[in-house]
Structure formats: structure tokens, C-alpha cells
Amino acid sequence: MPAPLAYSLIATDLDGTLLRGDDTLSDRSHAALARAAEAGARHLVVTGRPAPRVRPLLVDLGGTGLAVCGQGAQVYDAAEDRLLWSVTLDRELAVTALGKVEAEVGEVFVAVDQDGVDGLTLIEPGYLMPHPTLPAVRVRRRADLWGAPISKVLLRHPGLSDDELAAAARGVIGSLATVTVSGPGTVELQPCGITKATGLALAAEYLGLRPERTIAFGDMPNDIPMFDWAAHGVAMANAHPELRAVADEVTLSNEDDGVAAVLERLFPAVPGPAGAVPGPRPAWEPRWVPRPRPAR
Image (cartoon, rainbow, N blue to C red):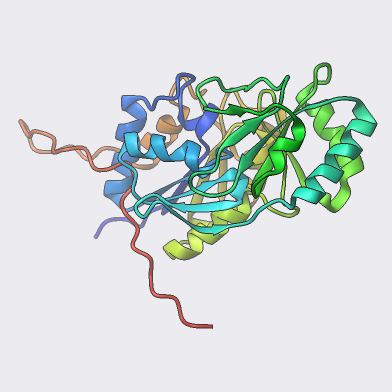
């Protein structure tokens, strides 16, 4: 009888963690995830990217399961191309929060991610996308950002560092929104109380998996709640110091296949018979079929 899996759920951030800087997944990482899937573990993407910015990536990688998107504000079913769950940031609260931030630190440049599987990323004049491969639509004025429901607001300041801007925002926003740093040049406001752990917990419940059987990988402070929820948190060598400080383990950088290095240790290859030809590589994420939920 095979030994039980140490971890049945593998939760990975994308940018700076699983993906290389050119938005690709290395052959080594692909093979390590496939080996874990063969052993019975599930892989779940948990990312700050909104669902529309994750969908093309999942298609390219063959993913047809779940993904946690928008910093935990969305649980996306790639097979059905629909949101199983989402929560929006009240636009009036967002405007109020921005006013408080600018009263504290001066002018900031703003973008928003619209809610929904076809939502756009809108950027106001002066805002520079920190990730140039992600598409965005420039609007003429800030008021144009609020025309449709949003999942989060993205902030940049011309002089302050990400950590300085986030600290200032937390000091004045209070309970209007959750403030997080999700990547270089990316300070975000999301619905109050919503974190990556929120979406991860919901997706794990759908899958019938538990935190004590979960290993999580990340690189930025927005991954801290996910590490708190999971049994084991692995920070990348390129991770923000705040995340490294709370990690159970530090692996190689995303460019050096740090996720794969850990998975190869946890799910070692089983030698086949001499001369055996490996079979086709399994899909990156097996399809999940929703279980019937009791009526409430």
C-alpha cells in the first residue's frame, strides 16, 4: 500500500513564485506538478491576478480546474469559465479610501480590476502597469474607473516605496478596505477582510481538502494569510522579507524553479522498468467536478 501523501493540496502564487519573469512555466516545474498530480495531490493557483488575466494562462497550461483570483476575492472555475464565488469592493468606499490616502501622502496613481470573467483592468493617466504583459485599458479621468463593479484598486506613488505607501494607507483607511503589497509597484485595496486565505479556504472546501494537508508557495506579503492558513509555507529566495520571516521554509527563486525543487523532494520519481517510455504528461490541473451541495 502506498504511503499517505504528506500534502494533498499544493497552493501556489503565480508571479514571482511559480512563473518565471517571462510568464512561462518551466519544463521542470511542469513535470514536478504532473508528478504530484500522479501521486494524488491537487494543485490550486492562488493569485492576485483577476480571473480574466488568469484564464489565458490556465488555457495555455491545460488547466481546467479551480483558481483563486483577485487576492482571494474570486474563486474561478476554468472548465466552466465562470466565477463560483466573488465579492466586490464598494466603489463609494473605494473613493473615500483614496481620498484619505491622498490627504496623507499626496497624489497617487490608480487602477482598478473590474469584477467578472470578462472584467477589464482600467488605468488612469499616469498609472504605469508594473507587469507589462498584463493588458489594461487607459481611461481619460479617474471618474471613469467607477463605471462597473470592481474587485480591487491598485495604487502607485511617485515617491514612496510600496511598503511606505502600504503603511500610510493602512494608517488612514481603517476598516474601509484591506491593504496589501502583492508585487513590485503594486499596493492594493480589496474588500475588507478578504485575503488569499479567504478564497483558498473556500476552494479547499469545494475540493474536500483541509489546511493541515496543504503546502503553500509565495513571494510577497499578500501571501502571508495563505501561509497562516496552510500547514506549511514555502517562500521563494526572491521573496519579500516580511514573507520570508513567517515562512516554514525558503526555497530557490522562481527563476531557479524553487517550487519544483520542493515538490521533487516531496513527490520523488518512481523508477520505471528498464527501457520504459514515459507516457503523455498529465494535464497541469485535473478537472474538478463540483459536488452537489445541500439546499439551505
